[in-house]
Amino acid sequence: MTPEIFIKRHCRADTVKREHVIQPLWSGYGEVVRYSLTGKEAPTSVIIKHCSFPKAVNHPRGWHSDLAHQRKVRSYDIEQYWYRKWAPKCPPSARVACCYGDSYNEDTGQRLTLLEDLDASGYSARYEEGNIDQLIACIHWLASFHARFLHESPAINWPQGLWLKGTYWHLDTRPDEWSAMANGRLKSAAAALAKCLDQARFKTIVHGDAKVANFCFSPFHQQVAAVDFQYVGGGVGVQDLAYLLGGALSEQALADNMDYLLAQYFSELGRELMAQGESQAFVHDVLDEWQALFMIAWADFHRFIIGWSPSHTKNTEFSQKLTEQALDQLYGQ
Ligand SMILES: Nc1ncnc2c1ncn2[C@@H]1O[C@H](COP(=O)(O)OP(=O)(O)O)[C@@H](O)[C@H]1O
Ligand SMILES: [Mg+2]
Image (cartoon, rainbow, N blue to C red; front, side, top):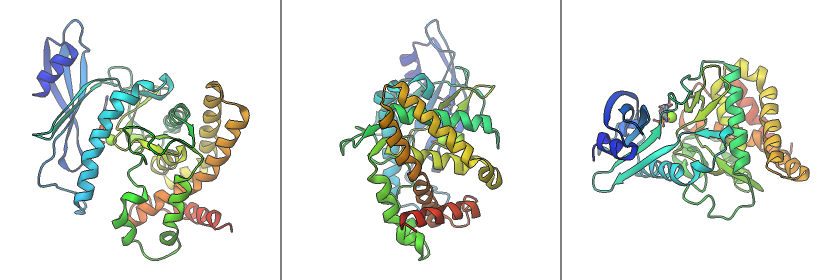
């Protein structure tokens, strides 16, 4: 089925017009496209995430293995499941796009996800380098999202239908990057860091790729909505937080604002949990655990960067310093 026919059916549109590609997907797996629609009951525009799996994959770093390919294919499947089953549970303060329908053709490998156009719904702005107001809106989004799905010691098969461990960088899925690391304290501690996160008492659903580019903002930055749920799954909230902060600001701005931004997250998380009716003692325990895990989550992402690309701009002195602190914390020094 062509995207046009698919949209027509699912949105009851009279006409459907392909407008433009917003972004090609990673490694040539497809594209994100905007369509404009007419019809009494149809939205005026929609976004389609259209994936197909070419045989020759053009990976920018040349590290293409079957494992990585399988994981990528599965990530699109998980994203569709997320939109179908979990996204409707998000509160307005953790806004996500509404999904009008999805399809997958096993024979052709074509996959279509039909989403509300968040630009048309008032989220037409994107992140501006160094904008703290926008970053705080993202932090509040994360706090609401994590509070909504927070569980104490969830069952091992939770969250159903998503990655049991969210994020695209967790250690189980990065053996090649781990092997490529130079010997040293971080490499030796990698499994222990991952274990701290895995064995946390309080778990939630993490977005798994919560960088600023995956948020859409209202023009005055107060409201925000998230996209790109390919690595959504179980985890601790501070994994998303560490990743978000590490990619949003210059090294200096991050060093200057880190404590303030962390305080924003934890106070909002506490407020949301209280609003959900949790006891003060419970909230205290969550904050206590996750505050201690922030550094660990930071070091865990730093471990991925060091193995993947040590010359990456995210391998800053500040990041190295936090990682050292995490390792000291881990070994009780
Ligand atoms: N529902 C949507 N409404 C508006 N913009 C969107 C929507 N979905 C995606 N986009 C835009 O397209 C970009 C790419 O989509 P995304 O799902 O993140 O693809 P990728 O997996 O390639 O990063 C996003 O960063 C966002 O700017
Ligand atoms: Mg994206």
